[in-house]
Length: 114
Image: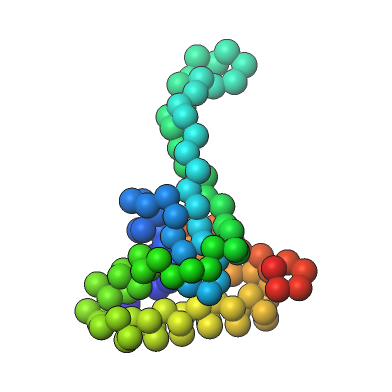
């Protein structure tokens, strides 16, 4: 069974934004190719950095579609599974203050509900 972080990681390979409904969204920012520092003569390839925006809350259907395909499930069943995974994520954040998303990074709980 594919976990939430794996769904997000795979989706970010093809999309610049992946939203976890009711939680927030991950945004991929593109950086161009560049020359290495200090005249090393090294050419560095383009890359993407991932940031998180808690204000992106609206369900765009992308993550649900991934769940539907992975679990061969209907929309309501996939939505229930995603909601359960998000509840687990929030619970871990509440208990430990951070949640590790393998292949993506770490989400830290801020002050209040941030």
